[in-house]
Length: 395
Image 1 (cartoon, one colour):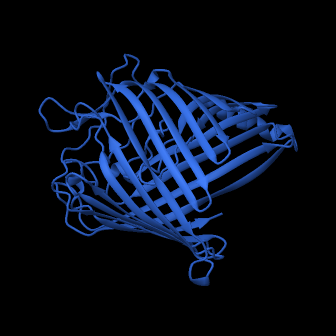
Image 2 (cartoon, helix red, strand yellow):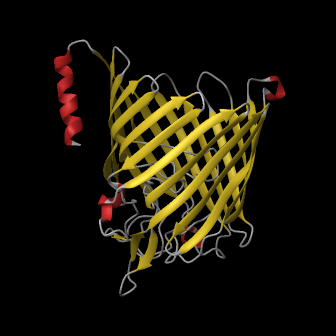
């Protein structure tokens, strides 16, 4: 981080060589839980949060160099662990011909499916934000990329591991035992193990695909009870993982697939998620588009969270719909239902957003856990159905 601050300090002395821009948002959020808490010490009722994420960028007139700085901070009224800060981005990027070099902190996303981000491996999940895996912590990295006619090749060197965030004893959306803040590692170097990832991506006609190899500390920990079984201790294993994501675009159809093979904690297993999205354009003679989604998830890992990281979607069907009004307010709605084929445990989710004007945006998110008594992982959240309302001011 010191080197990045030093680089930013040089910018005022470069004259007009860089174009500066700033953006970002501040937001107020209310999350209300429908039922009383299931476990001792958890709060009941409403959880209020204040969120700020400014974004600062410098771009050289030549276009060859770019600096980005994106801090994040959240203040929460109920869970002290949800009150936290992070640096989502703080990097220098240099482009020279067909080569690109990036050093610093950045966010990288891989994957194409809607219900589960299976192959996403570079960044750690900011789990105190939500269960859906959309929110990520910034990852320190060095990235070397090359874009050619035969595809793109990216090499990632990841010198510092970020531990997953977990709710505290007062927080909701957690397991019966609180997850401890002190983690254990298989690597003797703990957070300092050098992780490596190599990814190749290309397209052929209507096909887009990527394939990668990752070797290092797995982002998802096993949860091992401590000596007196009063808390869960995150244990981060060294893993080898090969993954792929494929998307076929054919008219109104999007066919999607993600798959991986992983070696972890003495086991080898595969996992996959795949399905389609079909879009009906301008329904009922309006500007509205209606998307129909269907995906299936399968995971071959051991179900014991002490032997492998816990997983919600191991034999599940996802049915969803996406509504895009295509209006000046960018109004959208995404609704989905996940059903476990074995236990019949279900999760109903709803996400809607609408811009109020050029600066303000309103969002509603809701998640309902239904018939979850027969699923060991989902049963921890059976009383945690909630509705979130968020109002954001962009600048």
